[in-house]
Length: 429
Image 1 (cartoon, rainbow, N blue to C red):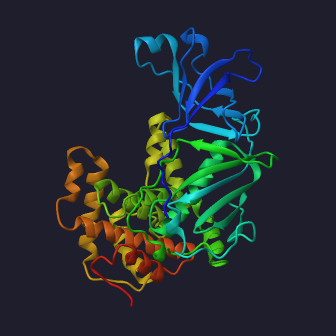
Image 2 (image 1 turned 120 degrees about the vertical axis):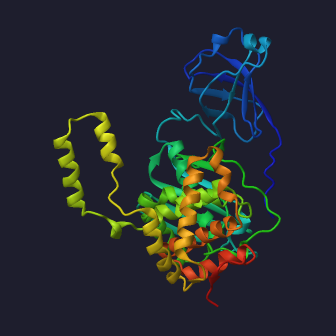
């Protein structure tokens, strides 16, 4: 069952300090709802808590699950009425750590491990309970050198609990970014946007986790129909899952930006917009190998730039010009050459003109990129949705091939997840 993302509002009343050594005791409240508002209603002056305060410490007698709040956040007052301008301070909390002890320096490298549940988690595995037993062997445990840590997952009924154990201590923001990055990988497998939820962090050598509230991620939308049966690779399919995961991480230096674009395009898989079209276009564009389409060799290109520097006077504008030099054939030429090769990876035969398709999508891409009054012009004909789907098909096939999945099987599962839409493609049986 999908988890209900509506969190009941819980209010904590606590004593707050701007630092551990500070002598002040300021009583305020924090609402543990989606807004995470921190309110100090009884201040004598606006300057009692200076603007720019980055850390506040709180001790609450009203929390049985933990006694001390560690609160790293950016403080900024928001004044709602003349009275509040005189007597209150408010801030939307970015991160809230609830745990057994103070974190002496929440801006430091203190995170040893981050644990979370991927959402929507029911779509990441089979409909029946997973094969591992809570407290026993994990579904998988993989050392990932390019990450600098170990990723493991455990079954909790029909849900997944994923943990990233870092080989060196991380900052809180860096740990969150790695949790989000792993969810980008799971998004590709599950054919929909996956985000981390129910976050916990282990600090230094402590054995009890800190509950982490973060405003960085919004809950994934609940769906009436789910795609569990069409997931490209199941988490309990070890060692295949581990091998694909390692290959995915190994290519993130060049492909991660494209992969974020692709996850964004999956936010609402049945809704087609110019923004989605542009996202999936940029995703495909970013993972295609252009090394075979260089106009000059790397040595020749470097020599050409050096010659320009020697001929023209050095100015900031010259450096900007050199950075914009492109040593590659045009994108439309590359697409015309690469799309038939991508189709061949999955034994798919296009029943449409590649040249006309490329001309059309490149025009749409340029219109969507410029925005303004041209933005909606990208959806003016009946080819818009099929073109968006075809771009998605090409991305799925190429990404599958690059990370070691069977492109044909992955494509069939992806199309099945959408009800097998009619596309101008001859698909394998």
